[in-house]
Image 1 (cartoon, rainbow, N blue to C red):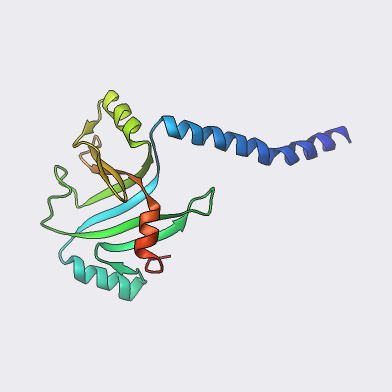
Image 2: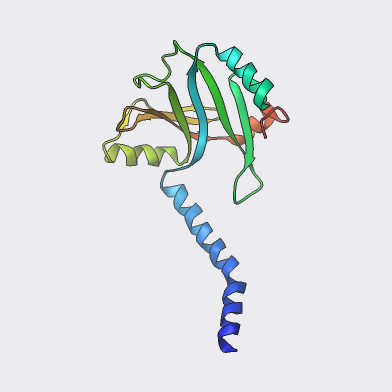
Length: 168
C-alpha cells in the first residue's frame, strides 16, 4: 500500500518537475544558442513558379511569392511558428558555395551565442549575422559541403503578413 501511495505522489508531482526542468532548459536557451527546429526547406527548380502552382494544385500548399509558408504551434505553448518552403531558380547563387540542389534553414535561439560556439568549434561561418524585421540570419557550411541557413525568427511578423494564407 505504501508503494502505491509513493507512485501516486510521484505521478502527482511529475508535471511540476517537468515544468521546472522545461523552465531550466528555456533559461539555458537564453544563454546558449541552439537549433530548435526546421525553419525552411529550399531547393532548386527548373521553373519555380510552375512547381509552386503544381504543389498548390496537387498537394494544397498555400502559395506565396516565395513558395509556401507552413503554420504550426510550438510544442510548449499556443504560439504560432512558421516554416518556409521555397523553390529557387536553377541559376540561383543563393546556395553557394555549396554545389547542392537544396539548403535547409534551421530555427535557432540566441544566434549570437550559437555563432560564437560554431566558430570555437571550427565551423565555417560564411557571413555575419544580418537582422530583418522577421529575424536574424547567418550561413554556415557543414563538413559535407552543405550550406545551412540559421534563423532566429520573429514569428509575429509572419502572423501579421500571412494570417489565413498559410499551409496548415
